[in-house]
Length: 351
Length: 196
Image (cartoon, rainbow over all chains, first blue to last red):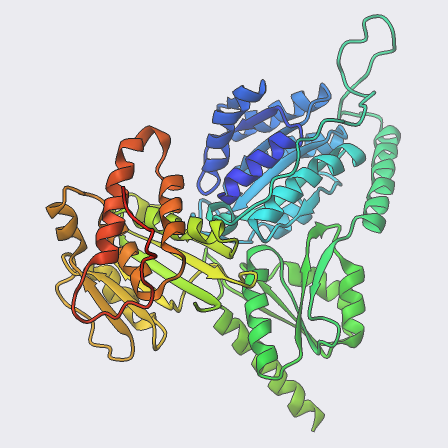
């Protein structure tokens, strides 16, 4: 199954019955799949007139208590930024897929990881975060979408799946989850009070600064809970690693190959793959730093996640960066060369 | 059979490159192996060159992008010229010799020219040259059981195009059985295998 199709099928099985999108390469297969499948499931597939309209439709469906999703690729996500901020402000769950391509601007259509800052820092204006999950296989695309809907409902926050063109376009075997049949209650949803309860209000406008501050403080308490309980990272050959490579998504696969080759050459390399980009898996990286002599961050951009890594490492060991941008996927060979160079410099230092 | 096999298939858009790659991928899926299929997408798909990376392995697959193929299937001269130097020493190169006049000069790889486009035309199988080449590939390196590949064909031909199923099987058979003098088959057809 193609990655983009897996994202769509998993969403349907997670109970998503409202999909709003606008076509853009390289995520178009997702919308095409939804167009075919959704009506058969009694759901709504709607190609909106723009990305902005699509995200606001997600806002509406979510406010009514329904599981809703939109998807796009980098330039389209920028357009959705305003709506995502409104969702965060109104504490609405929802899933947003970003199948990244190279930027800035229209950029290109080849795979990239250049929206890390946007996803983890400022998807829109205002003080807020999204939960951001970064799959690295088609199976994980499936599993994380499923998980994303649950996280969104649990914490009443939009959740983003940060994928890229490579993962969206590739096919791998996938085991699909059983369709979800039980969903959490949403007593806050605006579904009509029928004279039986007080009004529910879904809104992100609070003109009194004290009230607005309260909502921010409450939201950040929730973020603290998320940071404490939802950090996820995969560790690969890290136990005795002297050089710990940090990479997420597509680039983590390249690093995994490079780590294996480095081990064959006697270099103690390992990989930490952040699964949640926000909350950033600081605990895992910090623990690995205690044993490591150097950290390398590999990304398909000019250096974004490396900032988060440096904050965690906090000067304890050197942190290096290697990346390719513009839609180019780094090769295992060039990544291995960087690992070897670091290994050589470590040896030099010991002498 | 090698523990892992990285293949690159390349040609013009419309020659069936992606479909041929899917056949290999499905065969891997049916036999329960790890696999990945990664197409080029975008401008190439709209009339230019198309290529696709297919990895089969017994281990989880790292990079799905094949840069140093064990197997290159080239369906036109530009693709052959572009990728021939990247093939690993000892690799296999299957070439549609109807479309490629200049064969590569490397002597550290095994080269198998097959006039696939011509064979397809002669047998009323226009557009199925890529499946002939997959037949040839299977014959040379035996990446799966031939019956598995037949199953993959059945799985990959959509129901709406069911009338093309016999033609696909025929193309596969031509590729499997084609003699060109130089090749030594490493996998032979099971006795009970036949094409309907």
